[in-house]
Every structure is written in structure tokens, then in C-alpha cells.
Image (cartoon, rainbow, N blue to C red; front, side, top):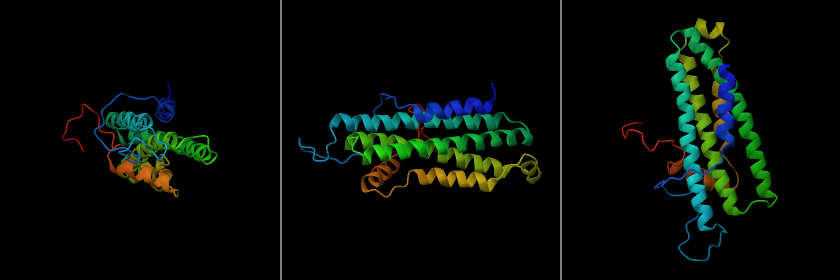
Length: 207
């Protein structure tokens, strides 16, 4: 099976998987805190928990997904092989950014049309931010791999560092919002560590 096909299947699973992974995140959630029984935001405790757990699950999936690139680069023993990996990544990143952009548009449209409650919107948005951040991180890793290639190898394999940087920028722009609620959710998701992708069993010394 062609590596690119395998990788595209991976991003489809990453972006499309919205299942909940049971985990105790120990982190703050991207939801407004309300100590009283009356939740003026319309966000129920169940929705808040589902959103936090969903983001954590997406984060773990993103970390596992990004580790596949590390493994492929480590297994490439020559500059030509590494250039082939980078070329595959450009295809994957393009597909990922386009898919996420469509997901963002659909999510925004559903929210503006009143098809989502605030709790549903926040939960979906937090998970989306984690996905976009994972793609940005993968693009950054691809940029570094491309920069490490000899110039002649890049030219021979049509590896364009500027193009990959552009994909990284586009991935970052996906989780930058104008709306107040969306900004709040994105900032909270990124600041509380939900998007970091630290695996539950990872060594504490790992960055």
C-alpha cells in the first residue's frame, strides 16, 4: 500500500474521529465555570465533561499520529528517502488543511444557524482546535526535515520549504477566530495543555 494513502487514511481517522476517550485530564476545560446550579451559558456539566474528555482524546490521537512521521523519518536512511517522506507529507498536509477548513466552515455555519447549543459548539470547537494544532505541529516537523535535506536533494525532489511553511501557517490560522466564544475556547484549549498531546504513559522528562 502506498505510504501516502496510509497517511491520508490516518488524517481521515484523526479529523473524523469524534469518539470520547475516558480519561481524567486534571486540566481546566474550555467552558465557563459556574459554581451555581443555574448555568446561564446553557452548558451542562455533562457537556463540559464531554468536551474536556473529547479534547484530551483528540490530543492523544494527534500525538500518536505525529509520531508516525518521526518513525518514518528515522527509518529513512538516505537523503533521497527522507525527501520522499517529506514529499508524501506535503500531500498529506494539503489534504489535512483542506479537510479541516471545511470542518471549520461547517461548524461555524451550524453554530450561526442555531443548530448547536453553546455546550455542543464549545465541545466540538475544542476538539477541532486540538486537531488543527496537531496538523500545525506536523507541518513544523516537516519543515525542519525539509530544511535538513541537502539543497541538491530538495531541488531534485521538488521539495519546497516555503510551501511547507505556508501549510504550517494555514494550519495555525485554522484555530484563530474572531468570535468571542470561539476565541475563548481556542485560547483555553491551548493554554491549559489540552492540545499538547502528552501521552498518559509518557516519560515525565519528555518535552
